[in-house]
Structure formats: C-alpha cells, structure tokens
Length: 143
Image 1 (cartoon, rainbow, N blue to C red):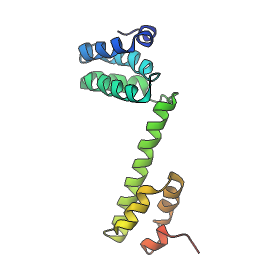
Image 2 (cartoon, rainbow, N blue to C red):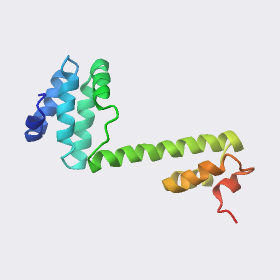
Image 3 (cartoon, one colour):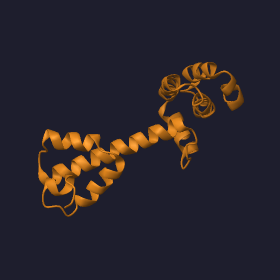
C-alpha cells in the first residue's frame, strides 16, 4: 500500500502491508504512505503501529525513508511530543556527562535533580557548567 489516502482509510491494512513488504523495494514508499495515516490514531495504537512499520523496513528502505523526510518538520502533536521528549532526554544526558567530566562521580541527589529538571533549567545549568568551580555553583540558584 503506497497510497496515502488508502492508508488513511485503512491504517491497519497499511501496517500489514508494511509487515509483508517493508523489506522489499517498495518498503520506504509503503512506510511513507502509512506513517502519516497512523499518526491520526490514538497515541497507543499510533506508537505501536509506527514501531511495527519501522521495524519491518530493511536498512535500504530505512535510509530511503530517512532521505524522504530529511528536513521535514512534523505537523502532528504526537510526533512533536516525542521529538521534544527525545531532545529533552538528550539534553539531560549531555549535561550529566559534562558534570561528571568536570566534577567526577555525582551524588544521587544531583542526578535526580538533573533528571527531574525542565528544559529551560537544563539549559541554564549547561551554561553554568562551563565556568563553575563546583557542582553547587552549577545546580544551586545564584545568590
């Protein structure tokens, strides 16, 4: 199934098509038709179906699909949510790596604060880590 309108009408059939043919030469085209259709489903089904579709692709089809969507800005709230979540998790991981490189092993409380922080706070801490002389200078509110 490579027709986006048909995939929108029958998303489950589109997922089955991806499972059956995703590793073939039409794999990227099938995924490109099916993935937008499943974004309109409830979050749990969309996540599950999306995972099935992407897992059905071989490396060639996956690279072709990535080339198709390179530079694409997601329109659905579903996709935007998970892109933002991935960025936020990446920010946390980078900050924790920087803190460990500067100050050695981190106390559990410091790790918990970083893991629970909002993105704006993480960005502030990332700037402070460049010049701070101690972990407290990074994580504590400036006086």
